[in-house]
Image 1 (tube, rainbow over the protein chains, first blue to last red):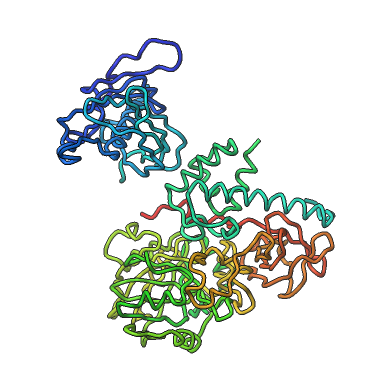
Image 2 (image 1 turned 90 degrees about the vertical axis):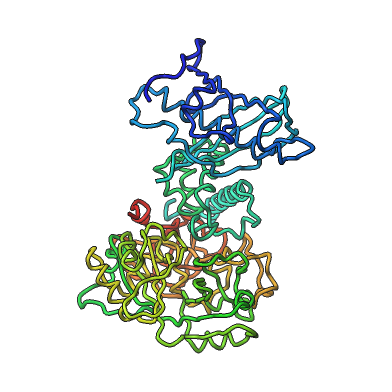
Length: 170
Length: 97
Length: 340
């Protein structure tokens, strides 16, 4: 796809972009029950961005985790943060002035390579809204380091760094 | 270093390099969370496949470390910097201000 | 000890160029050891410098085995395939020495066979070595990752396997079978088709030294673990648990160490020659590696702290000028060659 999904936000500094849930579904291959990001904003393509994931009691993992005490598993919080990273990556391809290869951009989404020293500071429960943020760091070969954070009402729920692969394996 | 350098001059320069090697080894061990002391890490063994037996994920950690500690960027073309601890130190010395 | 049929007229420099640009093939004349039985890891751990605990099937790794007094006995490849452990020495050792060494350890429920009849190993190393390896495996050769081991097809062989492991910093593979003649011929034929050939020990030794692996050609009986820069191969948390380890002390920055020195082409030295820094003795020559690289000479020396870092100027007994260097001295071409 070559058309831009959204208009750039008008302010000084680098152009930032916002993506609705419908936009994100065109960018990521993920679907229910594994689509863990509802919205993205302040995205500087290929560099950084923020996102939102609303946590609802209706999510499948709450049925088992735990039946009488709903706690969002830490690894699902990591998954939300990782999906924000994927959106930031795909945004780089979409918003680039360079002609992109034909085909689905969502096929360019890579994989999680490493979860490094992620801390979970606060339990996340139904009704919480996770505000996600990601800052992409140095890269080497097909790998990129990323710093990520998730907050609820301004308090850090999870933070740490990930390594993601940039693109699908051959 | 010229061939007319004195013992003391040679020793001083060698010690400085040794200290640099130890510093970088300590930073790597810290960064990768290895349970080994820097004296035991070879300066001349390859970093991949032997020696520290790093993988590509570890190498990105080194890139981040070198960036943060020395302000030096490592690009995809600089793969030779990972030939050994000495190769990495050579690379950092050649590129730091 | 490598044995092979070299074409008359080929020099060490020719062999060096072959390994560096395509692929060199040689037979590894050292005795294999085959271990079977459920307790074989326990047996190996009696003398392996690194534990077998996390060894995966179909992988190869290397460790050093020590003498009673903590000096190195041999460096061994440990190959795991089909519930059998194979050990292949990387340094000089005879079948008698191996049998004597392994005989020290109780082998309940483990069958230990030194130099099992008919088995031998062939190696091929160089940026195109993967093209030779491809002839022996059924799947895409790029799928055989570094330190992976897989079954191999060799004509007339009952058992054959190939490990991706080398000694030169270039791509390298070891092919073990009970039809070593056929294996060697097939490897040579495959090598020839990509411009490679059989190689002798000198060209190989020079490439190994330039990759920081000169230890394979040194007499281990004259070196300690620390001198030989093998401390990285020791699991220091297991000291006291494997043979000879109680005698080990971890190296300190004060320790002496082997280092590679370069000198202008044509320079010669002898083992034992003293080396000086600014007129003061700081080490001596262990070995001059073969002059197979026309650009310069490469000498291995045992040198005191801190003179074993790179960039140190040293002088030989006849005024020969040396400089210590970073390893690898020559960047492997394989670094930029993709296995297809």
